[in-house]
Length: 401
Image (cartoon, rainbow, N blue to C red):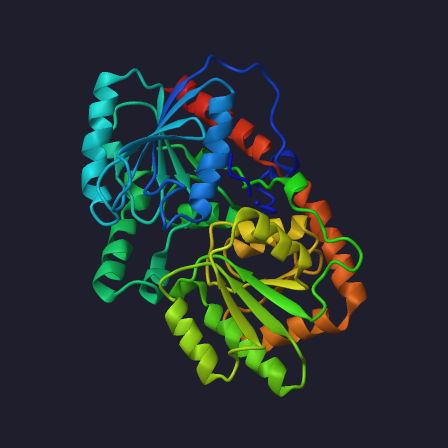
């Protein structure tokens, strides 16, 4: 199974729930689950939502349940495949999935006795309450809102924004799972009932992400960005922060690991700032072992996007004993504990980012303290707990229906 989650930050969620603990009680019979998600983990555009899907529902399959996934395809992708025990049906492509998935899902629902349907709302809603007559659970990482205009061309961004507008009305009576307190609050603000939203944070493979041994960090002060290179991720803010540090005489280098359609623009900006070469390196796609090594050896992990569902890389960095500097933004403030696992800074404030990085680079004792705090924090979360609590949520939906 692919490996790779978070304080909820809200008093409305119990201590046991925010710690990811499962509730007692006997497990029900194995269920048949139909999951709808825009991508599967093999898709070239896959990200944290797909990691969550496969880590969670792959474990649900291991518990004896049957899970079928309807996702989109891409050029050269087979229409049917088994991944992590999930039977994957690929229909449509990146932009046609929204139109084709409901029809395919309805055909599956007519031909198979599914107990429950999960709409994993990823990018745009499929509006399953209009056409699904089986017990339904909504799973939400985050909604784009106005951030869509920072990533996509205007027509596509406007379509995304408009399609999200009726979410509160269409899904008002549907039980939901949010991956963070921030996402739950967003759903409540849009009209969903707070008491019908269960917060189930992401997990992490604690054993897979180990702190570097003594002397195992990079010799030079090294910052790490790990994720997709999309415009809304705002990696450009990190480039500007590195330029500020250079001008102040602070020697650092930034490693940018990941792929995406914004790489060329970022490389161009790095060149314009005079950072190419010794200051910034673009590593492209990295394998899972390479990712773990980078997280363990880096001095500081950085993620300064304006909004995330959770920010899985923050928890992975914490598990590796590496502090994070992140935007004080929805999702990120759930997966970074300010002053304990890293620092939160106002989104878009380059000077604040540079200041926190400089503090961490100059103070080994501070890095060590936050690294230990991160490791302790990460130990509260596991994919096994996430999957167990997801099974509970699914059982409740079936029982209440």
